[in-house]
Amino acid sequence: MAYNVLEAISEEERFNFSQSFDVKRPGILGTIFPDTKTQYLKAEYYRLMAGQRLPEVAFVHALDTEAEIGSRPGFEKVLTEKLFIKRKINQSERLQQAIENGVPDDNNLKKFVFDDAANLFEGVVARANVMKGQFLSTGIVKIKENHVDMSIDYGVTSDAKVTLTDWSKPDADIMGDISKMVAIAEDNGYVVNKALTSLKMINYMRNNTAMQTAVLGAANKRLLTKQELANLLMQEYGITIDRCDEKYRYRKADGTLKTGRYFKEDVFTLYEANANGSFGSGLWGVTPEELEYRQFIQEENRSFVTLSMWATPDPVAVWTKASGMFVPVAPKANGGIVIGTKAGE
Image: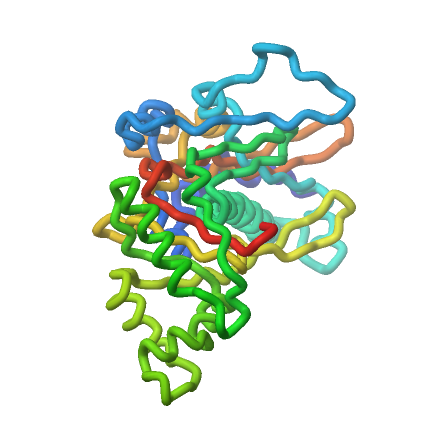
């Protein structure tokens, strides 16, 4: 009898898989936006924002279409309808490949199904982390998938988006740039205490003439150690520095795989961190697919990402899908973060 994946993997098994999947990943993004799950996405978002101005949403329309006046939803509607992250595969094709490669046509195939599910889940988590990195790099989150093309502007003011001098040059005024950024935050009522950037930008600072002079004196010029740089930034500005150079893979419309960065390489961001190192929250809500598992929930639902499977008659196939509802929450976006970018970015 042919392997029936829908019968072999019960709804409860899918729910348990979702419950046990941990979305926490090593790296600074999870510290800045720690992930949390809520059953009440909109209410919890408003609570975390504590009365701050809501982000502004802009939908992107194709050049040959015209947006209906008054039809663009505000952020409330976006919170509940647009922030889905979905990944799916044709499970029937995957199972047939496994069978053709020698895997017995029995319950050994279940492991392959859950491996596929884990890969889909990782894709959802990576997309959430892309949103975290986009905010920290630009102050804006862009969503272009699942027939949604929009940007969410968190309200980082124009004066808090600073054009840096050319840090690649040893005589660049890096210390002047940082001083300006610190002052902008102070003028807005915030004291920045953390910096996020890339190894490339860190090495520019280590090779900067003025920074070397500040540490070593005018007569001694050499590449600063990372500890010397860290000490200088703390003494001069009261900030500690973290780097984010993690990358992810994504598939373009033409099917080719590309590599992207969570955080832009030429950006230097300052922000006022909370005592635990966070700036906001990575807020996960309940997906429609998750509601189908209500009968199995005996305690608090811990599912950040939900696994679902179904069959279609045309094409004849069984599909596996991972879905999540996610939005970064940044209560101090209007003043508590200053983003430095190179000219032209």
